[in-house]
Each structure stands twice: as C-alpha cells, then as structure tokens.
Image (cartoon, rainbow, N blue to C red; front, side, top):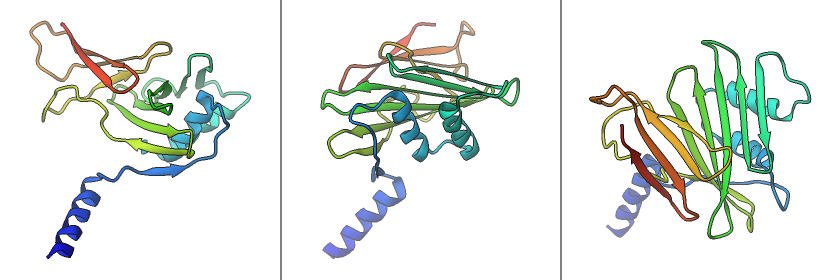
Length: 193
C-alpha cells in the first residue's frame, strides 16, 4: 500500500509539472545578460521555437537585418530583441536580479503582435552551475479569470509592469500592476484605474 501511495504521489507531481526542471549550464564566473539570455533561450518554452532561435542568433549577430532591432544593456542586466514589423512582430525581453541567496533570477518574455506576453523565470545557481525553471513566482489575484496580460520588464530597477484590458472596468482603463522584486520574492501591487 505504501508503494502504491508513493507511485500515485509521483504521478501527481509528473502530471501537474511540480518537478522543477533543472539544466546544467556552462557560463562564465560573472555571466552577463547575454550569457544568461542565451542559456534561458536554449530551454525556454517559447511558443515558437523559430522565434527563440532567431532572437538568440540576433543577440550574437554583428549585423542585423532591417526588421530586427536589439538593445543590450549589460550594465543594467537587460536585453530586448524585436523581430519583424506590423502584424508579424515578435518581441523577446530578458533581465535578471540578484537573489538573497547569491543566485540570479532571470526573467524571459515573448510577445507576438497584440497578443499576451508569456513570462518565464529561471534561477541560475552559480555554485553548481544549474538553471532551474521557477514556476509562478507571483500571483496577480485573477483567480480563474482568463486574461491576456502584457508584461514589460524593467531596463533598470526591480519592477515589472503588467496590464490587461480583459477585466471589466468602469473607467475603460486597463488593470495595472507593479510587480517588484525584493531579493527573495515578488511583491504585487494593484494600481488604481
């Protein structure tokens, strides 16, 4: 019976994705945002693998085509690549923060033209050189309400900006949040409409 219980618990973890995926990575002793972005891009679950690969290539390229733009701010730990134009537009952003335990928390976003932004997090453990998927590090308090949320990562500072037009509002304005990293967790603040 004990063996059956352990098997059921293991199946629940596998089916719900409760096992955090961890990847061994080789990065320099003091990785830059480019190093962290390329490591995260390799494993990120971005909807379009082609976009992920194209963004990674754009970060490394010496010359970009006319439909690709990039911002690499190594001082502030921020990177942004935009690919395409008009309705064939993709934007990939990444930044990182130091954690109280000495590790680095990497944020990775992908947005298609006027669509919701996917936001993923990874923890880079410098000591054992691993990159671990961080599942849902904050809650916007939406409950079961389905909403397309747009996230903007900060080029400097520790606050992610989030907004959605998908929730009913008397003013017609979007719901907005500031999601601030304090070194150990995110603090979510709903902004008035």
